[in-house]
Length: 152
Image 1 (tube, rainbow, N blue to C red):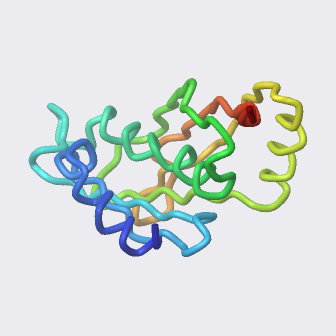
Image 2: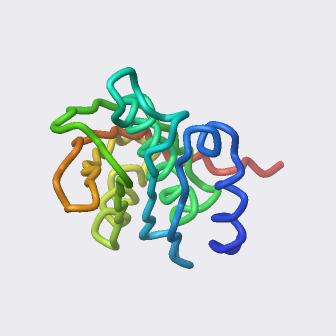
Image 3: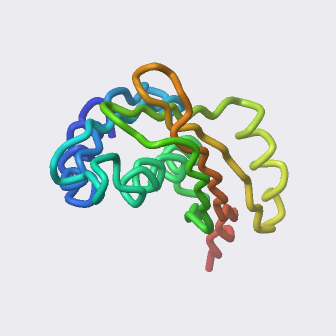
């Protein structure tokens, strides 16, 4: 699916839509995604800053979607584990940038070439409008090459 069409559709996906999370940029090659979240009455916590669950949700599907679009249908790709370290209160708009490059894709292909599972790890920072780190997120994915189709 074309990245721009996908971006518009994913911005309507209820878990992101109702948290106020928006994909601002999805590059055509699915190797860079920028996600934003503005502080709204519905994503604030009790003390008036970004709800931690919404900050974590900002990082949830992106690396999986990026790998799925770059590796193709010959691979299983799942989110496996995530952890977040809250650094500072999130106020105003916060942003996260997701990147993958040829080296990451080459390593995944090499480590899964014979059908082995591989658990690549990714790190992303969520920053506020002053570029201060609000949270650091660690994501681990599960990747395995699908078995070759058997012919009769």
